[in-house]
Length: 136
Image (cartoon, rainbow, N blue to C red; front, side, top):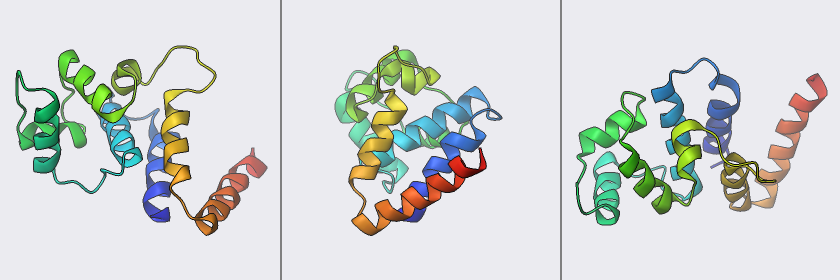
């Protein structure tokens, strides 16, 4: 659990600047899925759950695979459905931006992930983050 959290955090924080738009979308989608405890779902399971939310036009597991691997970005209607399903803003999911709220969507996703950690894991996270702050 801690490893996955750190992996997801590293993906977002350290490599967002060098990724393509498709890869950035993929990283945000994975983070949103992780925050909803759905990071271990198979592409077929994600497609099925998505299709229940978006009945007008279904997606295949191959489409989901492309989203998750930075090979494609879904159309805006699908992003709207994904954002409602995953409780994130469509602007954040698609572009990585939100309105100028006090707490960004990334903050909200990280908070959801942190809440699910044990006290020991939270302590390890504090130590991990502090090591970056001390180097700045």
